[in-house]
Image 1 (cartoon, rainbow, N blue to C red):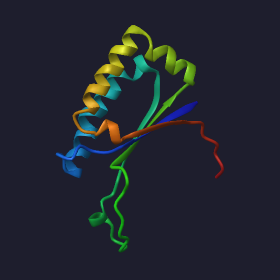
Image 2: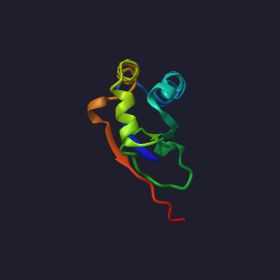
Image 3: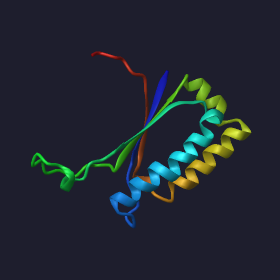
Amino acid sequence: MIKMTIALTRLETLSAREFQDYWRSEHGDLVREFAETLGIKRYIQAHAIAPDQLKNGQNFTPPYDGLAQVWYESYDDFLNRITSPSGKAAAKRLRQDEQRFAQIELSRTWWSEEHKIL
């Protein structure tokens, strides 16, 4: 199993709450819709906690507004699915939707393989 992690930066025109609500409900529904087509095994959204939401006095601004984690069987499986006609259509639709809530040019993506330590 491999994982794609995407660090997302919200559009400047959206509040943190608007970003989180749209990402969780609207975009989350699209990911569910295309999960089988794209071979998604698991999908998690990690929403940043804004400084005013923290109770322990920490003062920091998260560098990103959220992290999406998407698990696939293998990178080859991902490539096979994303290059199929239905995979291309699904990826295009997801990318179009991402532009409604995230600054794609400021977001970052990386691939990893997990190694459980604890």
